[in-house]
Structure formats: C-alpha cells, structure tokens
Image (tube, rainbow, N blue to C red; front, side, top):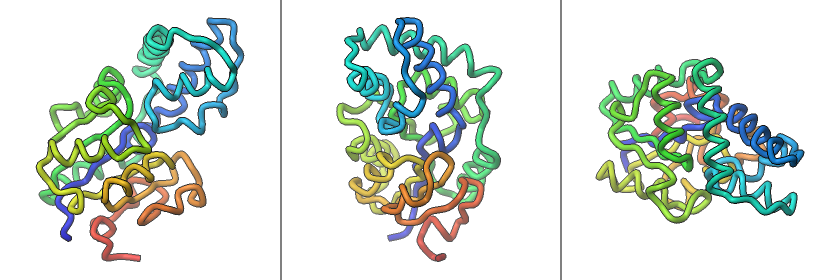
Length: 218
C-alpha cells in the first residue's frame, strides 16, 4: 500500500539524546548512593523512562520512589539540553523534505511530553510543527508493544499499513512491526545486527531516501 505518513521515534532518531538521559539517570542514582553503569540501561532503551529507570533499579535490587526518581532525572536532563542536545546531522532536514513531499509526519516516543517538548524545541521542530505527537502519557503499554505507533496512526487518520516508522532501538523495531507498519531502522544507537528484524536498515536518518519509504529500493 502507498506510504502516506512517516512516524519518527525521537530519542536516537531525531535527537542525539540517549547519552544525555543516560548521564542524567546515572547522576540521579549516584545522588542516592547507588553506583550504576551506563550500559545497565541498554536493555531498556526505547521503553520509556519508567522502565528505563525502574529496570535498572530492579537489576540492582534497589527500591525507588519511581515518580520522584523520574522527576529528578528529568530535572538533571533539562539542565543538559540547552548546551548538549543536538539533532543528528541531517535529521531535521530529512523531516522537512518528507513534509515537502506531502507526507504526514508524527513523532511517537516512549518519553514523557516534558522531554519531547524540550527536545523538539531545541532542534527547531516544535510539537506544533508535526501533524501528530504521541508520548508515554498517551498509552498504557509502551514499546515493544505497538500501542504508541497505533495511537500515532489514529491521530494522523492514516491506516497502519500506510505508515512507515523510523526507529533506532530494538524495542522500537518490534513495536513498529507489531503495529503492522514498515520499519526503517537506523544504526545511530545499536549496530545493524541487533536491528536485523527491521524492514530496512540505513546508517543514519539523513541517508534514508524517499524510495526507501515505500520499499522501492534495496
């Protein structure tokens, strides 16, 4: 079916924010006297901050007030955004290119809206620029469940089969495919071997071509 919409994940796709949320979460644990390793968070990338933080707490057998831990993590993160957050090279330009071709565009992220707004404002594509934005607050089940992408399709009024998702994380690829959508994975966070289930793999968002969206290229 013809592709009518492109749904972007945010962290690791549009914004190089994974190192920042990792730094903020490590700092939050450190404030509580808990030493965690940055790699502890890898299995939870793309699942939303509740699971991102909670999964590491479970691994270290730490009882956290998750709401307070997340609040503090975001507080640290938002202090980092103005000086450290960048768009991946060419990512914002690619989104504008797709829009110029008449495609509807959405952001579907497991992050909370406060983080989505900060990130998108920083790269010059605020939430008002998109046809739809879906955050963690909009769904019960986060990635790898398909709910976030299905919610985006509903907001866009486009059937899932007419949507293509751009993802960087293993959980996100699983979610997109479970939603019945074509998925282009970019190796901006994980290596290609880890993303092998995706419909197509490209090295960067900037390298995705219009023909890739519909599967007209190898």
